[in-house]
Amino acid sequence: MQLNTNATGLRQLPDGVEVTTEENGQPRTYRADAVVVALPPRLAAHSLRFEPALPAAVQAAQQQMPTWMSHSMKSLVTYETPFWRGQGWSGFAVSQQGPLTEMHDASPPEGGPGVLFGFFAGPHPLRSASLAVREAAVVAQLVRVFGPAAAHPLAYQELDWTREPYTSTPADEAPPLSVPLQGPPELRAPLWQARLIWAGAETASSEWGRLDGAVEAGERAATQVLAGAGSKA
Ligand SMILES: Cc1cc2nc3c(=O)[nH]c(=O)nc-3n(C[C@H](O)[C@H](O)[C@H](O)COP(=O)(O)OP(=O)(O)OC[C@H]3O[C@@H](n4cnc5c(N)ncnc54)[C@H](O)[C@@H]3O)c2cc1C
Image (cartoon, rainbow, N blue to C red; front, top):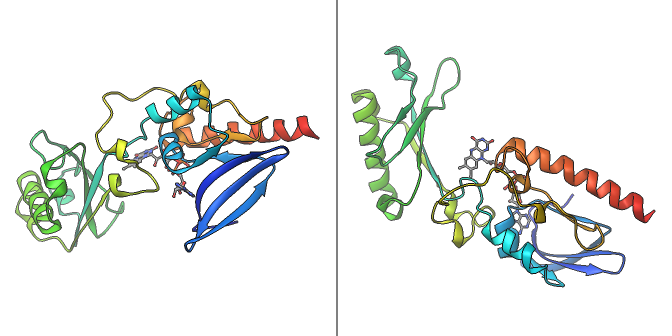
């Protein structure tokens, strides 16, 4: 197993696939009988060089396929206790004023700490503000929603998925206008004589984009690898 390794390219060979990687700034190549690409399709198109180039319909399918939630940003605010539970509240809220559009209780089932998380669901001016300004706006919103006990968190943490280069591409900064129910058939069909196989949640035929979809796609990809190996034996 090769961890912390950035795959940069795939090249079709007469009897396999050459994988190019970058590890600590050093390029390396590996040879495989078959390769499963389990990156979000748009990210695969953005960060992997394919030789020969993929068919135009496959490239288009990759680029048009959004990555589930990759435009989103999440804030987590930690308190000593889930104080809202004592008031009989679930910790769930939705807001059209923001900055968080939905909030959830992410605390352990019993005891502390108390954790509320929420999403900046789409583009919001605060996403490019300083951390301190954003934190103050989030805490002020939680005070409006959950009362004065929300004013003094122990910690504030956040992650903007549009800045995660192993999840998002520049095309993912804006939320998609709609999300598909399933991945495109082009991204479920093996290429390169069944040596280049697609997986990943965004290729699934059910539960598109979600964990269940990733598992389904992985099982389908494994079947395709075994079928390809069997046909070449
Ligand atoms: C903010 C957010 C909230 C979500 N909430 C939910 C939820 O509530 N329920 C749910 O079911 N799903 C949720 N999802 C979706 C869920 O995370 C995905 O369905 C799941 O992670 C997809 O798994 P995957 O294996 O297809 O891809 P990923 O988990 O994206 O795995 C791809 C892997 O490839 C690696 N990688 C990327 N580029 C390279 C490269 N060039 N070289 C080597 N490695 C690379 C990445 O580091 C990553 O480890 C959420 C996603 C996000 C972003």
